[in-house]
Image (cartoon, rainbow, N blue to C red; front, side, top):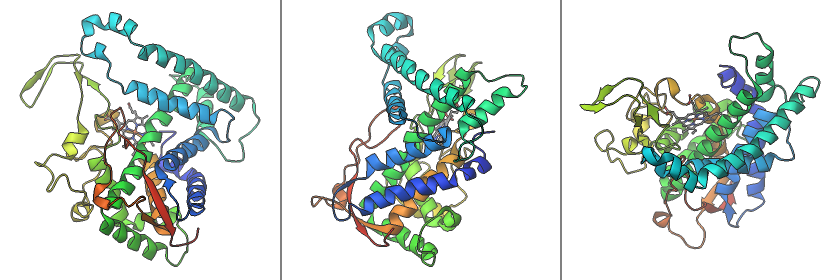
Length: 363
Ligand code: HEM
């Protein structure tokens, strides 16, 4: 309620606009040569999260972000103890995953404690305005039934980075990939963006609400490439029945949002990337009530970060498509583009997307 409201998300608008503009400038300097878009999209999104969370840049920001990425990767590995619970203790001792996660935890814990102490000891709010650590520290001082400890604050910050970084970046990455495969879709999106921002001469957040086709592209990308394909596991406290199956209490249930989004019972031409399907059914959205489309989950544990994620996806896409036309390198044909997914908690491309930018509007 304090961290992810529309108002709070709006307060970070200048951060998003600056970070995306930096990315666009960097791309324009590589005009005509191969540019690793995936890498830069990921570091831009983490850069936005870091400025929103910490205010200023800390010397170990990069180290912190790479620890978050490594932890996500490790947590996404299959742990065989989940399949053989009676042998869990032995299997845990044999696996290095837990030990590696513990080591990472020690490292990130120290970095986050330094950041919290630095915020606590400084006088007033830094020039960026109130950041998320400031908000949480203020909350810590309030009389509350559940006062926040420093560990709680570290947990929340860690959650926001691991929940919000890779997910939004991978949607931008997949959307660009799908559009490279379907140039007609890209042209239509470019025409919309260039019409809406034509008079202004640059893209900012004020007109994003007018980009209806772009919003459909984001939805279609989330349908085919949900960033957290298996959501987050659930455990039922009481026995229940789902579609005739008895589920005993304390079962761990995994929901396959990826498969639901591709199920031909709910989607016409299910495997085809067709943003137009959402133009015809604009009311179908990702807010957890259309159960055939649940990229942010549903129910009380659904993703609380939708408002934060939306401009993080729409703004970079709008800017990338407004300023540049894009070509595939090395004579690769559109239909040959590699679409392999990397398995894990999140589902990014296996190989980085490398493209050649051609400037259309100078940034
Ligand atoms: C495209 C972007 C994103 C996608 C696709 C996404 C997806 C998800 C999904 C599927 C879940 C699990 C929901 C469930 O099991 O019902 C989740 C949980 C969560 N997400 Fe996101 N997320 C995104 C962005 C963000 C952002 C930007 C933040 C924070 C800044 C965030 C923070 C969280 C947190 C804290 C949880 C855990 C909630 C809980 O367990 O109660 N997410 N997200």
